Image (cartoon, rainbow, N blue to C red; front, side, top):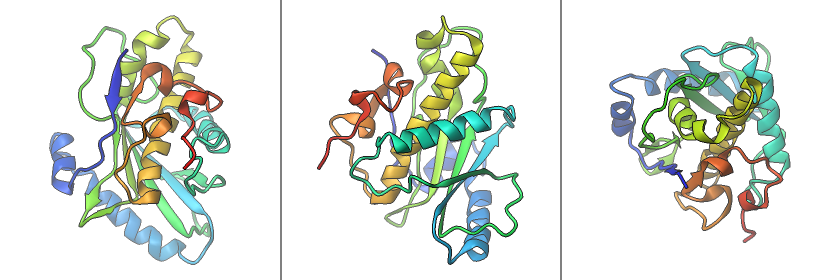
Length: 218
């Protein structure tokens, strides 16, 4: 069964190198600084999504609905994640909207389509968060290209809309996995559930009611 890892112990330098020289972290740091100053002193978590390249507009409602369903399904059991987090796009007009904390999520690659030809199993992380001066930063990077390549055999017989739904479910699982690392400020992984270091394609597309993805209670 194919599995992939979610390593997150990456310095700023290693993250930039893994993106083939692109400088994604600096613009996000600038956005974060601006957002903290503008949106401080308000309860609630804001999760701000960015996509590179741009994705179809109709994926956002499905993705946001699935993330909220995963949170409500207690995939994060035992960890204090904000189940009522506000999910928005970086391109949205946020004038007058305030958050007590903000997490930036960067979707890399084509998140709304699957490759049309077979590819070797991808290597490297599906998602990661930067570690700076011993602190896990509130930035989540998700590699949709690797996700699509990993999921393709498991969804090959599905209709286009079902394949897209499976991709959104996988993105949501990776997001929650990395969010738990941020919330706990820990690089620890679990022996079962969504915090395993490795998740199979079938686990990634499983709904939140799947008992195999529930975190073991502490």
